[in-house]
Image (cartoon, rainbow, N blue to C red; front, side, top):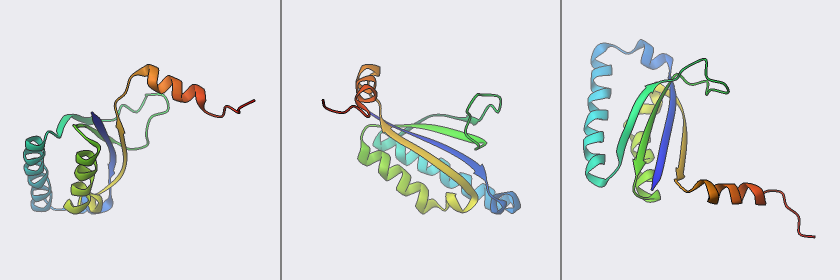
Length: 116
């Protein structure tokens, strides 16, 4: 299973957008979410970033998505690009496969090791 974590901050274009433009943008997001759910890509939630969190992202908002495969996660981000979302929001994405702590721990332990 893959996750996509989006973090974003509104650009001046969004802040200056009129109500009709914003309504159109979010209506498109709602429709895309419906279509994505049919492929197994679902949102786990959206929210605003808690500023007091240590080492927090500089972005103001986030959403977390679940996808059954890397291909569907990549397709999701392609759709975000095509939607025009990045015109209105400065965004950073994290995409990765969910794995066990033990698997990730082993990879970390192997970092920088030199064969002797």
